Image (cartoon, rainbow, N blue to C red; front, side, top):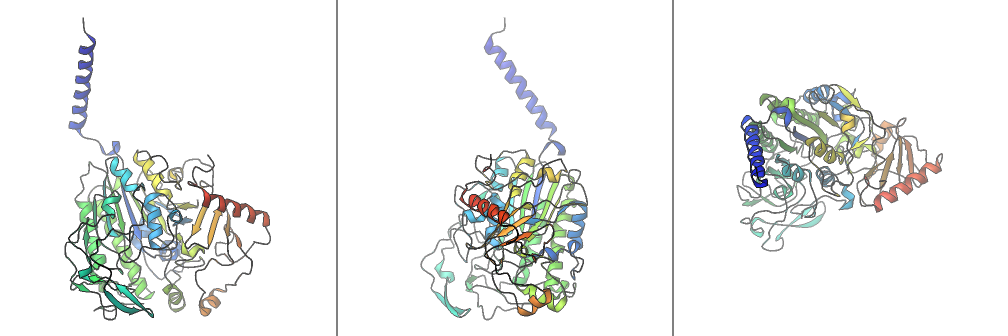
Length: 516
């Protein structure tokens, strides 16, 4: 007779034996989740990607190739028209306006709450190695010895700033990437904000011992201004070394991966954001001035990451995503007039705007064998959708109420049958007063303009833009992506519908679950 306990022991022994066989044989490439690499450009316009701008003066061969090998979205949006909010939204699947509207300033506190659930946290909990390399701009909990003791005149006003001796550099820096689910971080924080130093994980390998002289950086930009804020720097800090150093570190990270372990790399470029500082070997590579050359370098850096994935033999099981945090900076106006290159493409508006040019961004995703090469998707999506989509693809599960604004767009990626539009609606917002909501082909803006500032008279004449006088705006985005024909008075019922839905979304805790 076999007693129950004996039966249990036999079952356990068999289970252990099976597990040992499985693990000794290893996990095949097709049995584990794909690696995920997000390359996130900074202040890159929709029209800066050559493949979607027939009049482009900037070659982007590496990104064009990525589009040929993957899926390019023509109607993708960042959460905000500025840096920090869009990054927060991307990493949490949460609209930024649920937390705040502005950027994190120099030595600013984290954008996150400690109970926020992030994409890297979920992936890490499910066996991924996770890394963030490049621009963070989402805050740390710095430890200060005293209030800022430095003072300087900048932009017509006196500004207080921290000197090196005001900061306790001996303490680990909490609240940053390492506390948000990343195993590894390497970067300079934000290229035009102090401290001007490298951060590795939660420490500074070299402690700042000088202050950035904003009137004498020590180098010249090749277009525009430095945009630097005063603060501590490492002696001899060279901004021209930042992008090459980050690229080298990202390639090294990929080269060091174990092919049997899935990884998530969030590579946040500091370019083509100002300061516009292409390295010398890229000078003259475009027909759009120094910014165009910087964009060529940005494209080249993205290409090095993609090539490293291929060289490591990881291409077939790696999802590569390329996008940008918002539209181009105001330098784009002069660039358009001087060189005939429109960084915003045929979209109205720039960075900070609720006009399309502020948040309608490049978006490419490649996954060989899963996503049809050379495909173009017209579905309206938001970067907040990446969290739910990537978690699902990885085989993990979202914690309850995580990613409250994130839709699963995998049916689009896999060319499955689905009901369009996939998202009920998408909110466009930068600052607290101006809001837009897109539902299907209709876009409503709750103001007479979607712009944060007035257009230069010369650019306005060049494009033939007119001002609007209605209290709100309504556009048919299928017919009028340039937002020239205001239909506010023609469709009052649609205005009221979208106005009500916008209010409902803003009052909700989750736009995804609102209708469920």
